[in-house]
Amino acid sequence: MRKKSSNRPSLSAMTEHVERLCRNADIIWRPWLQRVDRAYCLRLVDCELFDISREIVTAPIHSVFSYATALHEIGHYLSRYQRSKNSVTRERWAWSWGRANALVWTEAMERYAVRALARCEKLERRRHKTGRRSAAGR
Ligand SMILES: [Zn+2]
Image 1 (cartoon, rainbow, N blue to C red):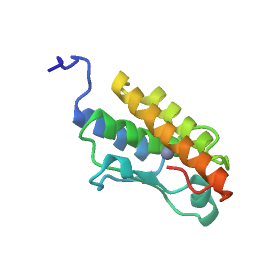
Image 2: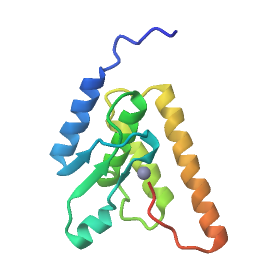
Image 3: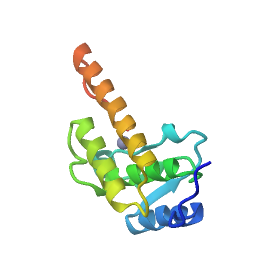
């Protein structure tokens, strides 16, 4: 087993960080999912258009991956280009924001983010191929 890094923040510190970021940005956080990869948020443009609260839905913070995912979802409100029609652009900037604002960003978190972004790019290419309009990115 790898030695746990001594400067790694605890799960409760990461949870409190997400709570604080959400509080400061008027985002409702619902950490009630079972699976990390099912996380989502209400689209910024929809929140603005329909005057509804910003809301992210994620798994509770049980690992650096659920932490990275929660930051990514917050990034969908606080990073640049979230009004872009291009879902890959939105995804890329949301991950950049998460990376830049995390208490810790490990190599494993980076691989996780790269994989998630690659999945999104693949989906987007498929949509282009079939001529369908781009759906909401996650
Ligand atoms: Zn996303």
